[in-house]
Length: 390
Image 1: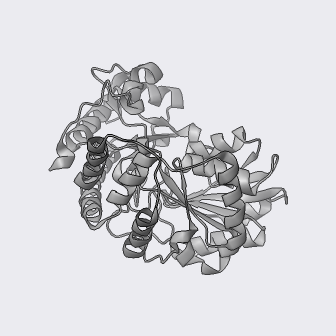
Image 2: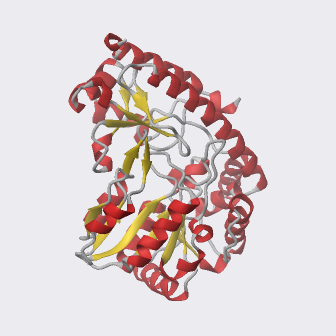
């Protein structure tokens, strides 16, 4: 199986592998890199073929006539998610962190409060703060080992200075697939407090068996006048370095405002990324994604069983994404101690939980999108590093 291939990524300017020793002190010749959210798998052959076709042509000019590119996005969302969108509502950005920055700039003002459901993807807070806006944390409730939304608690935090909520759906790092009634609740909360809702659905294709992602326009079709959708091929197909993403806006007024921001910033599509995205959003790409999710689910089961067998460690049930959120509270250790065991003893790099905001302090996030042999190795290393708790 192609996902079992162990590809040497050292010396390729890989943030995930080439920065491991510098940032974590984990030796490159012995360490396991399980932090940055990209996969250690090659993309489907159709994506590779698109890049090779460009290379064979040898002229790398501006991308024009994007009708086929837009149609591939429309086809994917309709076929895979049951979401019928208008191709004319699609904007192309340089990835979804760039898209987040553009959305924040287009619809909020300096000093505005922007709500995040914490703990949540760390780049949101970084982008908001850099734009001179204020992060307003709305902590998720931990109920029976999984995250739930406490709307009453959030209502009590509102001051009237908030202008936007950024939703991560499915949730990173908790791996939750929000149910229809939860998404409806988010929509009603945004209406109640007059908030723009930016929903980042970058992980929407990576959903574990037994769960179903619902695109926000399907859960709350009545809030188009405040809804901005963010989607991308990059997580699904492991092409994050292509820096390609989409902002999809159905409302005319919201779309006009965003179009002005795109024009003012001089944003145009990355030609390589657009060719890759069009190739990925295809029947061949769909077959590959189905095989990928099956493989990731197998990794999930092995990792969870191994981690949960260690007294004091608990991996949050993973409904989507390839990011395992492990709680070390039960060890009784301070973060410095459990991090040292993971990084020094097990020689594994994982994301530090506190970077995801309130509620993440006792956690580490592990990327399990890697060949199964590495998952088995990681489990063995962790069980040894915490062996005195057995």
